[in-house]
Each structure stands twice: as structure tokens, then as C-alpha cells.
Length: 268
Length: 255
Image 1 (cartoon, each protein chain N blue to C red):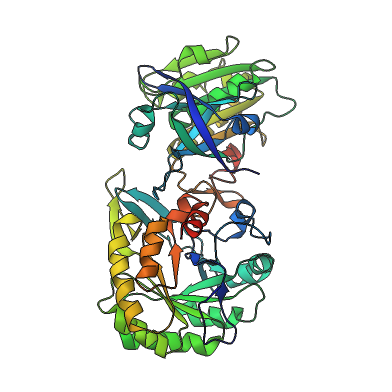
Image 2 (cartoon, helix red, strand yellow; image 1 turned 45 degrees about the vertical axis):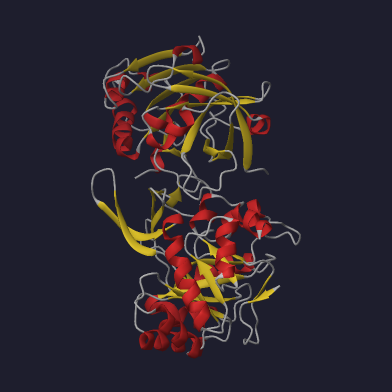
């Protein structure tokens, strides 16, 4: 068992070091039957699941997923789950699963969502997705969310940060329990009509970049680090763990194949 | 329920504009239904990229085989065309909500273009024995099903004059339009042609009841299990995922 929030009284103990990154399993309920999440002995390989971004009102949007030569470009299209939807419909289902489910929060709604959902059964913690910002700005945002919830708080860093080590240290000092990186890199791809889709690039193309940043951050902070960004094979996961990560998170690999977490967990 | 199957390529025929594959997958052949699709890739690959989606063209539970048709010009499927008989595939299937004719249906009109055509072929082959089935297919001179796959009792019209030729075949304004006599119509279309299909229905039937016209909506299906929501389509029931709630929709529900 691995504790991703060793200094938090609520704890975040995971059975395997493989986590479903935010949104890679959608609202989780849709794929629960395929993964056997409600069965105590299911061998899905997942230690925790992070659901897509939640905002106060929820937003409809049209996500886009574009295959690239060495990865997947994803644009969320502005879509998010709503607090009411999570509290009334999703969290009661998550509570019956034998794997912790965390909420992803971001932007202006992050503090309010954390406050609204902190006591809801079925929610094991939060993942705050930070944009590219400075260490002091990151500290302000983490502090604000930490005031709203005592549940385990992961902070996800994007790949384009000028100084990820400083941002990670500031986030830990402000109350984050663990750091996850990298949440993709900004990129774009042309569509059939020539127009560009802007989004975040994941998949094997970014793995070497992610590994370098994970190694740098893991060497600089004492808190658990979750390595993500192009992790798709047991070898990738092993490299992340050897670089100092306590766990890995799968995004595009899991979206492409629900068996991937099991394959990686068994291969470690 | 099982979601992933290992399949072995049993037979492969390369026609002028289409490749037909029969793959052995007994478990899948038992449960696959017309309108459903599969995500396919080389056997147990750890390739993390998205799998291409292929509409199923047939399933024979007795032989334990499912059939697919591939457009050889599709860059996402070029690797599949070169695989020999005996090669194994990893299939995520059967996905999507299938098409089933209404109990009162006696005459079924199938009309379509593009990558979802195999779904119509599957319907024609599954129901040709008990329904009167007409199949109208349009496209370029390449991607049209080979004749030997079509049951003898199915009336077939094809046009290689492009996707728009489908609506010439339908001749919605003519008294002899097949839309007028059909108990049920199933289209296979990309989203860009849904408006023309609805217009053809209006021209031929003025008003039509729910269930009369259904459509297999083609387009990218990145994850196949409803998590990415990239395949959402707006319906009168809200945004729905083509990969899970579809790909078969009632034409009246589409905006």
C-alpha cells in the first residue's frame, strides 16, 4: 500500500501505484462495469481514479481528441461536471467502488467546488490543476483550496512551467499533499479542413520531457510525486518510479485501453 | 460481459476499392449486432494511440466469424490491410447500441454513404430472410460493398457519382421514391448529410413518426466507451455520445 498523503489525517492510501489521470475514465460510472470497480477483488490495476474537472454549475462542451504521429492531442472543449451532478448522481456511485475517486478542480471555481464537495461521501480528495504560473501565484491558489478542504490535495503541474521545482516546493509549503506532473504540453494539430485544434499533447511524445521534470521535482521535494505524461508501458512506469515518483498516472494510454492499468501494475 | 477479444484473420479479399476481412472471434460473433462497431489494433499492442473504429459488416455465430470492410485509402487502417491470414487482432467490441427493426416492419429501406456502409450491409444480411430489404449505396467508385456479400433477395442500387448521389437515388420528390413505401428507413451518413436526409424524409412523407427513420451516424469514435465525449452529438434529448448512446439514432431526434 502506498500513502500519497502521509501528513494528512484523512490519508490517501492506494493499493497499486497506478492512477487514472483526470478525465481518462470520464465520469468513472460509465466504465465501472468494464473495470469491476464495485467488486472488492477486481484486478483492474488501479490504485485511484481522478474524475474530470468539476465546476459549480457544470458546462456542456465539445471535447476534441486528435491522434498525432506520437501522441494524442486533447482539448476539453470547456466541458466540466457540475457540483450537483457529482453530489447527487456520481459520488454515491463512487462511494460503492473499491478504489478512491478524487475530484479534479481548476480555475476560478476551484475553491468553491472544494468547499461544496469536501464532506461528500465517495470523494477521497482533490486534484488542483494549475496553469503555467509563478511559485507565488501557485502558493496563493493552493492556500485558498487548502482552506476550503482538509481532504488530501494533489497539485497537478503543466509541462510548460519555467520553474517546476519552485512551483512544486511552493505548492507543498502551501498545503499540497502530493505533486503530479506533467499534465501535457500545449500543442495544436490541423483538422481535415485545415483549421487548427489547440489543446494539450499527451502520449509517448512527451514521456522523455515528463521523466526529466519528474526526476527534478522528486529530488527537490519530500512529498510524494506522481509521474505522468506519456506513461503507457511497465517500462515507462518503472522509469518514473526509479526517477523518484511514488506512483504514475495514466491518461491517453488508459483512454485507449482500459486494461492498461492492470498491465502496468502487473509489470512493475 | 467481455469487452476485448482476440481475433484471427481467417480470410481476406482485396477488391478494387474495398478490402473484406473475415476474422475468427467466436465470442464476439455470438453477440455482435447490426449497427455496432469495433475498435481494432494489432494483437495486444502497448501502443497508446487511439484505435480506429470499424463498423461490423456481418457476424456468423455458427462459424464464429465476424466480417469487416475496409477502405484501403484510410490511413488509419493501412496496417490492417497488409496483415496476412492467421494474423491476430485485438478487438474492443461490440460497441454501440445496435439497430433492430420494429416488430411491424415488413419493408426496410437502407441508404447510405461512407464508412458506416458496412452497418447497412450487416442489417441487410441479418434481416433479408424475413423482411423485404432495399439497399441504396452511394460514394465514389471505390468504397462500395462487393456484390457477393449481398443476399440475393436484397434489391440493390448503387451510384459511384459521389455521396450526394444518394439523394438522387432516393428521389424523394418522385411518386416512386422508395421512402414512400418503406415501413422503416435506416440511413448510414456522416453528420454533414443529416439535414439532407431529414429533408428527403419530409419531401416524401411530409410527417413521419418516431422510429420510421433511423440513422447510423458516422465519424470519429476515439475511445469507444464514452469517456472522452469527443463524439458527442446534439439531439432533442441533449448531448449524446455516438459511441455509447449511438451510433444509431432516430433521425427525428437529431438537430
